[in-house]
Every structure is written in structure tokens, then in C-alpha cells.
Image (tube, rainbow, N blue to C red; front, side, top):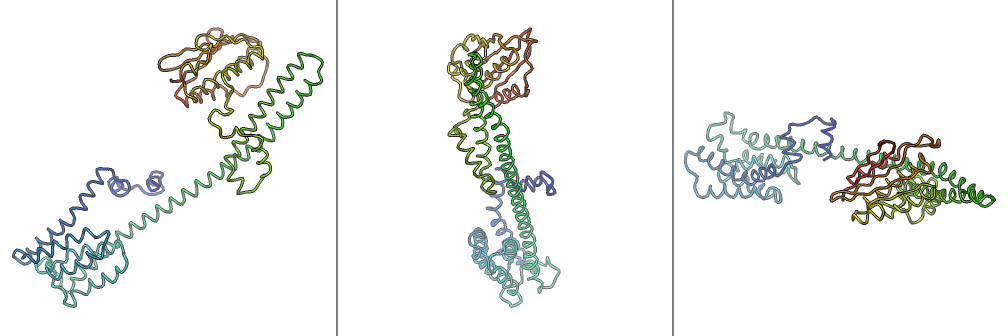
Length: 422
């Protein structure tokens, strides 16, 4: 709850645990105790009134008084749905028995809840005894009150109403503070969402302008080289660069579309760059929102084919020689993890050990699938830029499905191992 969160963060002083458990978040046992107390309270008031009236009168109550007390006790069960009934019955019991117990209870209830006409009812209760419509309460007859009989309205009506009013006002203040905290939390959440949306929009613009435009320019240059070069090998390499750039441009458009799709509300609110948003959305095509694996990585076979086109010899062993994810019966999420880790491992091998053979070995166990990718360590790798986050991202992907990724140099070979549960 908002009130509990505010107390936990120090926005409000922490109450006693039993009060918090009783009022804010009662457990099943506490709710049962409260329900039993609510059911037994009218009976307790009835028994107390009957006993105390007999004590004051020095004799057992007659049948009429017992019926009056019983009617007063039963009327208290209607205090929530029909408070007018116990409000009328209470003074009648006072008039019939001289006991103001039920009037005191209703004075507390009326002061706390303040239903319609509660002031008029309390005013009527207050003047009943001075007008002679009800007898002296049994507390005065028993000699337990040293004050004059004229103070009966004060002790039986006014003071209980003040107590009830204080309790009710405290409850209303707590509810009001909780509403304010809830409103403040909603406003803070809305502001945070707005900031995130605008940041996503800014990132989408930067990615579109910086990455997208540069990749597009690179693709155009590679296409021009492929069209004008007389060297067949140069044309082949330029064509592959152009194809890779086209694929990358499609991925960039997809990511930009995702970012702008999440910031769509803020984009509509500000009205900024609407035309650019439409252009990016159309560029991203129908891939947006098609599923968790949409444009996330190459498939298993696509990664191997791309590595072999780059001159890497990929040797597949065991279940990895076929569709290992389908053979092991993995779901889409785990299959996507295998695809992504293999793509990253082959990419690293191609980048750091170009031309070397890469071994991909699969193992299917009753509870998991393990794939090992190994390539030789070489000191003659070209100096290529590296972000250094590929394997960390692969490990995060594996952890999201309950798996893990480990990597390191074993002997003279670099090994990447991925394990996913079945």
C-alpha cells in the first residue's frame, strides 16, 4: 500500500507494529479476531447493561427490561447498514430500563462516522434527560458517579461523542494523507514515465541521425565500389559489405521504431518531429512488436553461413551438427539465447582469429543443453574496434531464461560455453 511504502521510506513516522497490522494490513488471523469482536460486541454491551441495571436496582430485571436490552443489542448489528434503527432504539432502551449504555455506544458511532443528521440526533440525546423523557441512568442510581444527576447528558452523550469524533477525525486524516501520498506517487510516476519517453525519443533521433545515416552512406559507397570495380574479388567483398550494411540499416530502423513506439505518447504530447516519426515507423516495417525474437539476432544457421562467408571454417560436433534447439525441444526464448550466443562467439572468432577453424560442440542432457564454441588464440588479429559488451550481453540473455554463459582461454584456445535449461 501507499501508506506502508511511505512509512517504510521515512515519509511518515512508523507506528507500532500491532497497530499497523490491525488497521492497515490485517492478516487472516487478525481479520478473524476483528470479525469475532464485531459479532460479540453487541452481546457484551447487552450483558453489561443487564448486569449493571440489576446492580443499580438491587433486583433482577423483569421480562420487559430483558426484552428491551435484547432489542438494543440486536439493533447494534444494523449500525453499519441502517444506523437510524439503533439510533431510535437506544433512547427507547434508556427510557424503558434507565440504562444509557446503548446511547453511549451510538454517541461514539455518530461522532466518529457523522452520518446525515448526526448533530440533530446527538442534540436529541442530550435533552432527553433534562426534559424528563428518560430516567436517571443506572450509574447514578448505583452510586458510582459522584456528580449531580444533571451531568447525565454530559457523561452519557457529549463525552462519548467527543471521543468518537476524535477517533473519526484521526481516521479521516490518515485516509487524507494516504490519498495525498497516492496522488504524489502517481504524479512522480507520470513524470518519470514522461522523462523516460522523452529520453527514448531523443535516443531514437540520435540513432537515426548518427548511426542510420552513416550506415546508409557506407552501404551506398560499398554498392558503388561493387558496381565500378573491375576486380571480381573486390566486387564480391564490396557486395558483402553492402548486404551487411543493408541488414544493419534494417536493424537500426527496427530499434529506432521500438524506441519511438515506446515514446509515442510523449511524441504526440509535444507534437515534435511528427513527420520524422512517421518516416521511421514506415522504415521499420511490420517487424515492430512481432515477438521477442524479432530482429534480436541471426538464427543458428544464418550465423554459421555468415561466418563461413567471412572465411571461417565452422566444424559442428554432436547434436550441434543439426538443429540442436529443436532436437532438445527448447522453447523460443531458450532457442533465441543459443542463437544469440553462437552469433556472438562466431563474430568474435572471425574478428580476433580470422581464417581459423571454429569448433561448435553440442551436448543434450536431461536437464540442460550445453553448447561449446572454441577457436584458437592468435597474436595476429587485426586491430578492430571492440565494444567489449558482447559476451556480457550474451550472459544476460542466458540468465533471463535461467541459464549461464562462461568464457575464457583453455590451453591455447578461447572457449565460450552456454547452458540453458530444458
